[in-house]
Length: 287
Image (cartoon, rainbow, N blue to C red):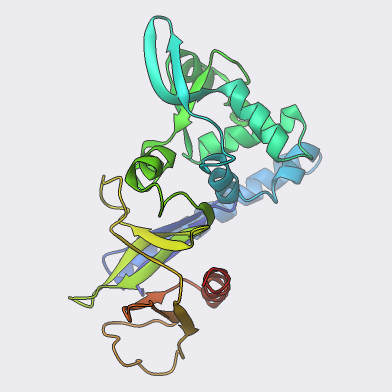
């Protein structure tokens, strides 16, 4: 965990990066921090008298939660097939369908604000352009209007999200385990059962039925590398002082343990104490 550092975008999206050494990690962190400070100073000077009320209201919206809702198997946006200029595109949706969905789900949003929010999802790489119309819009539009509220402009979920468990992959994998509503998702460190080494995994918590799955973000596989039912599980926070029994390797703290009904033990590290407690509380509600 020492070599992992976190970047949080202006939209509240977390990205975890791992360096090859402490020196490289510190250099990257210092350079990125210096660049961010310069950009903030420039933006403050330009926008001091030009505040956008819509952007101010949208600033507090968590894009990751919007995305979870967007490809929820029950209430998310519907994927379908579209034809553009003679070409067929599958598993995508129109720009106007996205804006309609955002306005419906985020009841306080205007249509203009929904377009801005959709542009943020596109900018963060959660959505991708599909076909020539949306690509042209992305190239010619302003930064806050990259997304087109148009029935002929097509978009889809990004390929990286599909590889980490999107709607299409979930539906084809398991009608039972992956049919539940996504409650929480995020990157955590998990100790392996055999080699006892620590690896970053994308964890997805679902309810009704309650399951916890984890994906390997470095592979192109569409299926989880592991998962288990939360029925009958026990979860507990572990003390940061000392190394608990059964744990090996470099422990940085924020550690918790899950014991399944079959007595399999999972040791997991969160990036911060707050995130650890949020995961523990969320999982306990499903056990």
